[in-house]
Amino acid sequence: MFLFNRTVLFLCAVAYIWTEAAYGTSIVRQWIEPSRKVFVPMRASYEGNEQTLGGFMQLGVLAEPHQRLLQSLMQRSFDNNKKSYEMVKSAAGVFWYSLYQRAEEDGGHDVRDPMNAFHGDSSPSFSEWATPEQKERVQKLVADIVKHCCHPKENFVLDGYGFTVNPKTCTKTQKWHIDYHDDYSTVFVPIVNVTPENRLQYLVPSTLLLREDLAIAKADQNNINADYMIEKGESVTVRQVLGKKFSLMRMDFGTIHRGIANRSGYDRPMFFVAVSKNGRPSCALEKGMMTVSDDFSLQDTSATQ
Image 1 (cartoon, helix red, strand yellow):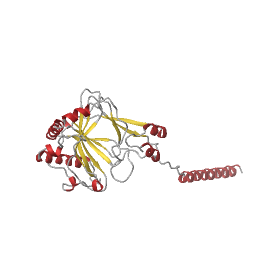
Image 2 (image 1 turned 90 degrees about the vertical axis):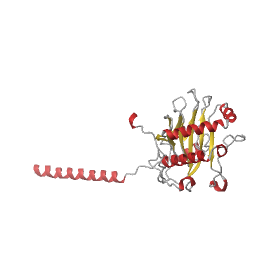
Image 3 (image 1 turned 60 degrees about the vertical axis):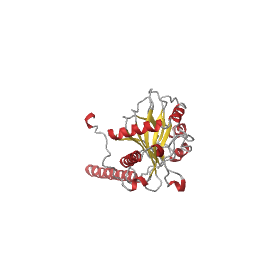
Image 4 (image 1 turned 30 degrees about the vertical axis):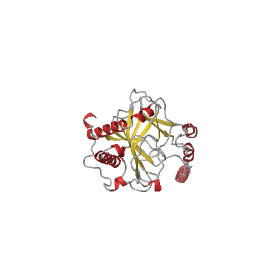
């Protein structure tokens, strides 16, 4: 009888353990984590329509022939607009000097001659003072930069190119902003080193920030409400961009960024090439597709790494 009771109790214990294990397994399988709509961090690729935080990516350093071309172009540009250049520098803020800007007529698809960057000034524009050879070389380099730095599956137009300058007289830190709209991306090529004293900054929202709260914070894209993003998402991350002169620094679509007061003691000019997504390939890129020219090259930095 004693052995019989122990056997029965052992079988009951096994049955109980099996039942509890099966019940626990069922609970785990049916568990559904309550969904929360959070902001998706940095995109791994350009494919899809996921919202992005943007950011910067370093994509090499231009070879010396391209460096000399940009240095010469910058000098000629400012020499032909000395009066306006000095006037804008005295304003103590970051300014832009556009050599080419896509026209807004006819839905923004038509292209006009490069505009004069200093609005209202009578100085000659790039199309007026540049020789045909200079214009051809610059346009070729611009197309190669875009093709090297942008993903071939993106559908965009070339929106403009020129120079942006953070002068040594700049005492103002820009407001957090997005250039024009979320479908706007820029490749910067600094003519001098970008250092902690004249750097760019960009802002990364918390992954806890809801999309609808981000939209509210970005309602004025010329003045992004970072305080609201902190209030709703608990935090933000501020990153800085430093770079070697003539490096290719691509700012991704929709990047929240700003320039800071320049404390380096020298002007920080950068050549820029901007693209905009609007469902139509750029006229500048249709002929060559997404293959860069044979004479487009980058510095070999492997020896110094």
